[in-house]
Amino acid sequence: MPEADDGTARGEAHPRRAALIRLAAAVAIGAAIGVGLFVWAGSPGGGGDRPAAEGTGGAETRTEAPADEGRPADAPPDDVADGPSPDDGSADGGDPGDPGDSDGDEPGANSPGIEMAPEPDPSAPPPGSVGELPPRPDLEIPAGPDMPVSEVDGLVDGFPVEVIAVARTATVLSSSVSSDGSRLHASVEATDSRSVAEVMDGYTGLLGELGFTWTVIGATDGGTAISFTREGHMVVVSARPEAEGSLFTVLGILDEAG
Image (cartoon, rainbow, N blue to C red; front, side, top):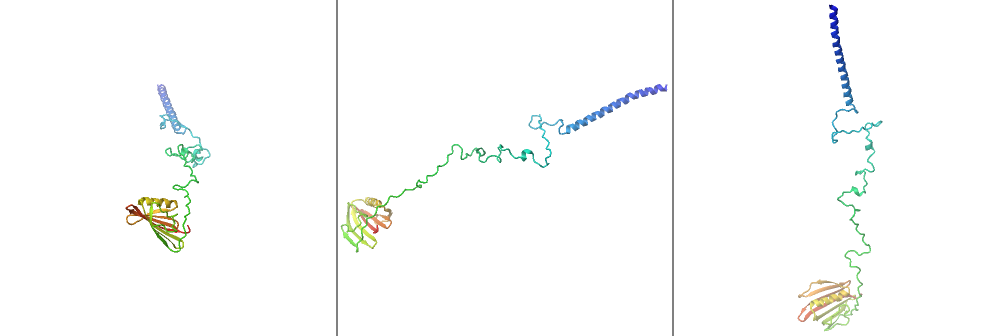
């Protein structure tokens, strides 16, 4: 029967068409879901399988930065534009006078254990100073004679014994004095029972007390000679050994004005 065959064929065709329609709908829905997941995963707020942030142990921690509304594209962030905080411990923002800024190995001027050098006393004498020298005594120099005079075996009159003293242990052989109008010239030659060193020590002590300074100078015949000076005065003492002591000579040029 032809009708029965056509109905059967159409009955079998309807289930296939329905299955194809359902399959196509499922594929379309799956594609739409896949596209939606792809778009959502690629968006800034989307999830997805992202690698864990480095150093977080596999768990990513993210903080959403607020959108900068109304800020130019080339403007620096707030934390950079405002500069370092007053409490910032950086070298640029720190206090130059803070001891914490200095190196730990180099102590500062105010560090414990470092003392400031004391101020020098302005009234203290300078190093090496001997202080004020004592006043030197006045020299008693007699007026010279109008003509040179001399004497043998004793001291001539007018000999300046206050300056050129002769020890009691000495024996005077000769003496003389003269004057050139402003200076007195005096000389004496004598022997002494003392040694050359003792004679020199005696005159060094006597003339030193009168303010003379001395210098050892060259001498002949193996003797010793010392030159004594004080301003306009000069005395030269020379001595050499003798059999029973020493023979010495004193030559003086003294300023008569004292």
